Image (tube, rainbow, N blue to C red; front, side, top):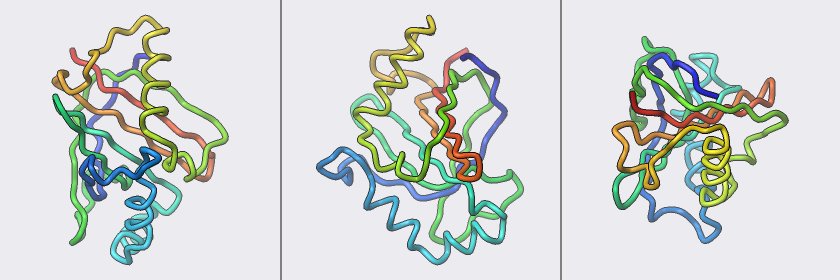
Length: 157
C-alpha cells in the first residue's frame, strides 16, 4: 500500500469547503467545471479527456476541494484554471476497479474515512486530523478507459 510518488501537477479549480452540498459532495462544483469550455479545450488539447481527479487539501480546521486532472509538468495552465504541485514523496495508495465519474458525486465524509480505515488496517499511521500533516493531501484519480480509480494519501517522511 505504501509507494513512492513522483511530483504530480494537478490542474483544475479549487472549491471552498462551504460549497459542499447537503449530501456532503461537490457534485455541482464538479459539473460546473465539466461544463466549462476552457476546461474541455484543455483536456482535448492535452489528450486528457479520459482522466479526472479530485484533490482534498486539509487544513487544521477546514479543507479545500479541487476538481480537475493530473497533467504533464510542461503543460501551460489555461486561464480560469489553477495549478497545484503535489510533492514527490511517500503515499498510501489503493486502486479500485469498475469506477466511473459517479465516484466524485459520493459524500466525502464517507469516501475519505473508508480510505483512511483501509490505510489504518494496513498498519500505516495517519494523523487524526489530516490538516496537522506537513503533506495534508488526499488525491483521487480516475482513468475512465480502464475504470480504475487510484486513491492516494500523502505521508510524511
